[in-house]
Amino acid sequence: CRYLGHPRRCPHGRAIPVKVTCCLSR
Image (cartoon, one colour):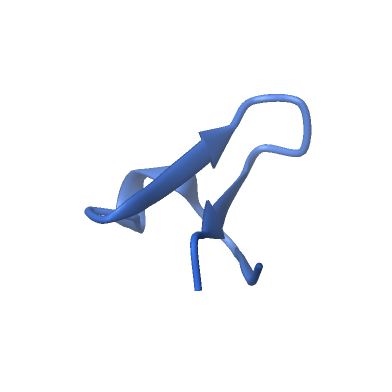
């Protein structure tokens, strides 16, 4: 699972409001 800077930039991932990030399934 990788964390990005912004959850809005995750078309095929999961947004994490708690960490304000996006977690990819890969």
